[in-house]
Length: 140
Image (cartoon, rainbow, N blue to C red; front, side, top):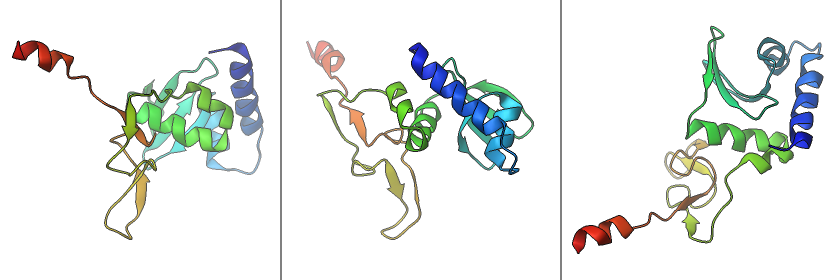
Protein backbone atom coordinates (compact mmCIF):
# COMPACT_ATOMS: atom_id res chain seq x y z
CA UNK A 1 0.00 0.00 0.00
CA UNK A 2 1.43 3.38 -0.94
CA UNK A 3 1.98 6.12 1.64
CA UNK A 4 -0.58 8.48 0.14
CA UNK A 5 -3.40 5.98 0.65
CA UNK A 6 -2.22 5.29 4.18
CA UNK A 7 -2.29 9.04 4.90
CA UNK A 8 -5.80 9.32 3.46
CA UNK A 9 -7.03 6.46 5.66
CA UNK A 10 -5.39 8.08 8.71
CA UNK A 11 -7.12 11.38 7.90
CA UNK A 12 -10.52 9.66 7.67
CA UNK A 13 -9.94 7.88 11.00
CA UNK A 14 -8.89 11.12 12.71
CA UNK A 15 -11.83 13.08 11.27
CA UNK A 16 -14.33 10.46 12.43
CA UNK A 17 -12.69 10.03 15.84
CA UNK A 18 -13.00 13.77 16.49
CA UNK A 19 -16.73 13.69 15.75
CA UNK A 20 -19.11 14.67 18.50
CA UNK A 21 -22.47 13.61 17.07
CA UNK A 22 -22.43 10.32 18.97
CA UNK A 23 -22.64 8.38 15.72
CA UNK A 24 -21.64 4.73 15.92
CA UNK A 25 -18.94 5.17 13.24
CA UNK A 26 -17.31 7.90 15.34
CA UNK A 27 -17.25 5.61 18.37
CA UNK A 28 -15.83 2.75 16.31
CA UNK A 29 -13.07 4.95 14.86
CA UNK A 30 -12.13 6.06 18.40
CA UNK A 31 -12.38 2.63 20.02
CA UNK A 32 -10.49 0.70 17.35
CA UNK A 33 -8.26 3.44 15.86
CA UNK A 34 -9.37 2.20 12.45
CA UNK A 35 -11.67 3.25 9.64
CA UNK A 36 -15.12 1.64 9.95
CA UNK A 37 -16.04 0.03 6.62
CA UNK A 38 -19.10 -1.93 7.65
CA UNK A 39 -21.36 -2.09 10.68
CA UNK A 40 -22.98 -5.46 11.27
CA UNK A 41 -25.34 -6.75 13.91
CA UNK A 42 -22.51 -8.06 16.07
CA UNK A 43 -19.58 -5.78 15.25
CA UNK A 44 -17.55 -4.00 12.63
CA UNK A 45 -15.45 -4.44 9.51
CA UNK A 46 -12.49 -2.08 9.90
CA UNK A 47 -9.43 -0.87 7.99
CA UNK A 48 -6.18 0.19 9.64
CA UNK A 49 -3.97 2.86 8.16
CA UNK A 50 -1.50 0.07 7.29
CA UNK A 51 -4.18 -1.52 5.08
CA UNK A 52 -5.11 -4.42 7.34
CA UNK A 53 -8.80 -5.37 7.21
CA UNK A 54 -10.16 -6.44 10.59
CA UNK A 55 -13.26 -7.96 12.17
CA UNK A 56 -14.23 -6.52 15.54
CA UNK A 57 -17.04 -8.03 17.58
CA UNK A 58 -19.34 -6.26 20.04
CA UNK A 59 -17.06 -7.26 22.94
CA UNK A 60 -14.12 -5.51 21.26
CA UNK A 61 -12.27 -8.66 20.17
CA UNK A 62 -10.37 -7.86 16.96
CA UNK A 63 -9.03 -10.37 14.42
CA UNK A 64 -7.93 -10.25 10.78
CA UNK A 65 -10.88 -10.46 8.40
CA UNK A 66 -10.84 -13.36 5.97
CA UNK A 67 -12.42 -13.66 2.55
CA UNK A 68 -15.12 -13.37 1.49
CA UNK A 69 -15.85 -10.82 4.24
CA UNK A 70 -12.48 -9.07 3.83
CA UNK A 71 -13.22 -8.15 0.23
CA UNK A 72 -16.87 -7.42 0.95
CA UNK A 73 -15.84 -4.91 3.65
CA UNK A 74 -13.52 -3.19 1.18
CA UNK A 75 -16.23 -3.05 -1.49
CA UNK A 76 -18.61 -1.50 1.03
CA UNK A 77 -15.99 0.97 2.26
CA UNK A 78 -15.00 1.99 -1.27
CA UNK A 79 -18.53 3.26 -1.84
CA UNK A 80 -17.92 5.90 0.84
CA UNK A 81 -14.17 6.26 0.32
CA UNK A 82 -13.49 5.75 -3.44
CA UNK A 83 -9.71 5.75 -2.93
CA UNK A 84 -10.08 2.32 -1.27
CA UNK A 85 -10.82 0.81 -4.69
CA UNK A 86 -7.03 0.55 -5.01
CA UNK A 87 -7.18 -2.24 -2.38
CA UNK A 88 -9.70 -4.34 -4.31
CA UNK A 89 -8.71 -7.20 -6.61
CA UNK A 90 -8.32 -6.20 -10.24
CA UNK A 91 -10.64 -7.89 -12.68
CA UNK A 92 -8.70 -10.03 -15.12
CA UNK A 93 -9.51 -10.68 -18.76
CA UNK A 94 -10.44 -14.27 -17.89
CA UNK A 95 -13.11 -13.36 -15.34
CA UNK A 96 -16.84 -13.46 -16.00
CA UNK A 97 -19.84 -11.69 -14.50
CA UNK A 98 -21.09 -13.49 -11.41
CA UNK A 99 -24.06 -15.64 -12.37
CA UNK A 100 -25.52 -15.46 -8.86
CA UNK A 101 -25.89 -11.65 -8.77
CA UNK A 102 -25.79 -11.05 -12.55
CA UNK A 103 -22.70 -8.87 -12.19
CA UNK A 104 -24.19 -6.39 -9.72
CA UNK A 105 -22.47 -7.52 -6.52
CA UNK A 106 -25.92 -7.72 -4.91
CA UNK A 107 -27.92 -10.92 -4.50
CA UNK A 108 -31.66 -11.04 -3.83
CA UNK A 109 -34.06 -13.46 -2.25
CA UNK A 110 -36.95 -13.68 -4.71
CA UNK A 111 -37.62 -11.28 -7.55
CA UNK A 112 -38.54 -8.37 -5.31
CA UNK A 113 -36.63 -9.52 -2.25
CA UNK A 114 -34.21 -7.67 -0.06
CA UNK A 115 -30.74 -7.23 -1.53
CA UNK A 116 -27.59 -8.33 0.25
CA UNK A 117 -23.93 -8.45 -0.72
CA UNK A 118 -23.22 -11.43 -2.93
CA UNK A 119 -20.94 -13.92 -1.23
CA UNK A 120 -20.31 -15.85 -4.44
CA UNK A 121 -18.29 -13.01 -5.96
CA UNK A 122 -17.35 -11.25 -2.70
CA UNK A 123 -19.61 -8.34 -3.80
CA UNK A 124 -17.32 -7.60 -6.76
CA UNK A 125 -19.83 -8.62 -9.45
CA UNK A 126 -17.34 -10.95 -11.15
CA UNK A 127 -15.56 -14.24 -10.56
CA UNK A 128 -12.46 -15.83 -12.01
CA UNK A 129 -13.05 -18.70 -14.39
CA UNK A 130 -11.42 -21.70 -12.73
CA UNK A 131 -8.58 -23.23 -14.67
CA UNK A 132 -9.15 -26.83 -15.61
CA UNK A 133 -5.48 -27.62 -16.26
CA UNK A 134 -5.34 -29.97 -13.25
CA UNK A 135 -8.40 -31.81 -14.59
CA UNK A 136 -6.76 -32.11 -17.99
CA UNK A 137 -3.61 -33.60 -16.39
CA UNK A 138 -5.65 -36.31 -14.62
CA UNK A 139 -7.26 -37.35 -17.90
CA UNK A 140 -3.90 -38.13 -19.48
